[in-house]
Image: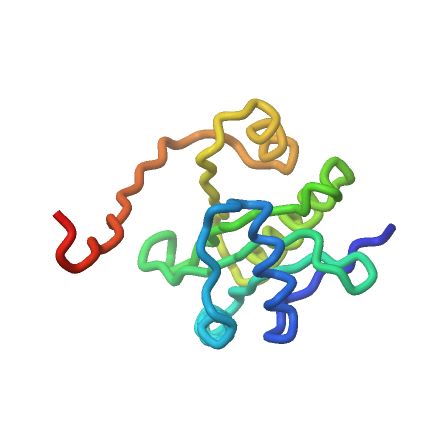
Length: 155
């Protein structure tokens, strides 16, 4: 079946939030009104979008592309891809690769000099997926996460 790829709209958010369960089943979903606000904030960055892949009217794949302004590389921006996910029932059909290709094309259209992504997965199949989509594992990534606030009175 053909995959239709386009930026997510507020009306797509219930399906998109459900799709994110395939990314991390334990992750807390935001309330719908907050999700709409966050989508609008993200789209305020020129060229940035949450891309969705649809089969018929069902959201089966997604990734987020953020275009980041830059003061090096002649002022050319760079792209960051996050939240790459395909519904488990639709994996292995090339939909994830197609959504990544659309994100990379969007970054090139926005004048980016590079596109990067990180994965926490060490699974060979996941790493092979990103390599087959044209990404190279050439840098070392680091991150720091904020710990969740402790409950009042918890010790």
